[in-house]
Image (cartoon, rainbow, N blue to C red):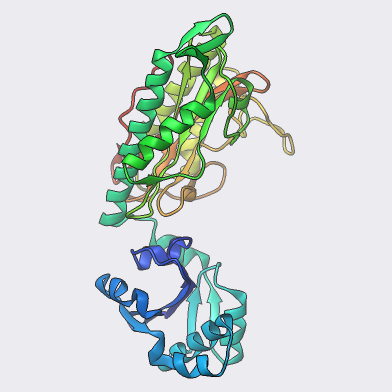
Length: 376
């Protein structure tokens, strides 16, 4: 059995949060040796980490007080304590994630410990979601849908007036919708530094977060990816709305995107190549005369049509393996993936619909239950 070393905090490191499912904001050493899971960290955190089934050991057991008395700076303390712990557990070689600190790697290697970066080991560990992670994803998705419903309610109450969209005597803005979404996130124990409420030409520009007053008849793309505070797992969903008269172009975009989403939901299952699901959607768009990454010339940069991948894994990162695009990768039962086809015209606007799905052996469970209606 290969030994494992991780040095990180569980707030920012998905690799460590998967192994230690509690929030520890300061970096610490995690060790797997002969099937035993252990950690060296502040006594402040020991009890909570032990409750997670890990042999948590306080710094004091490795000479913390002695090193403090020598006047070592905190950063040097971390290096020396980690080396002492690794030696005590008898680790002579280990795999580490790609995010392992270079400074600590240099210290351990200088002491004769062989380290190998193996990105795939850590990615595969968390592909299939455990029970707690899946529960967190479901909570995050439920809260995302409640927030989407709150945004939709604002749009329902709003009325087109000339070229503007008015609500309570004021022109409705992306910022007002975002405040309402954040409020709902807070009520559901979710956190989100950013999310998209974009309109008009903004909605055709990738991850433009959106800003400013909304006009009548233009597309409004709302893309939410909140994180469940308890599990640190994400959800991800997108819907597109129009307040006022819907143009033929947006209506056609919406129908094609909806059909593409339904096609992808019927194709996803364990053992299927993510690229195959992507290709099926591109074929539908090609039949409608829309460009995709598969129809463009090498080196050509698309800004209209379907110019992005179909989806990605979701868990302790909002974008993680597997990928549903041109890159290779097999879907496995237990993956949670997004399916997010979209069509755009640069300078005008776009439509994107996104559902979250749990991959099963014979298909998928759609974790999203929000309507697709273009008009709120």
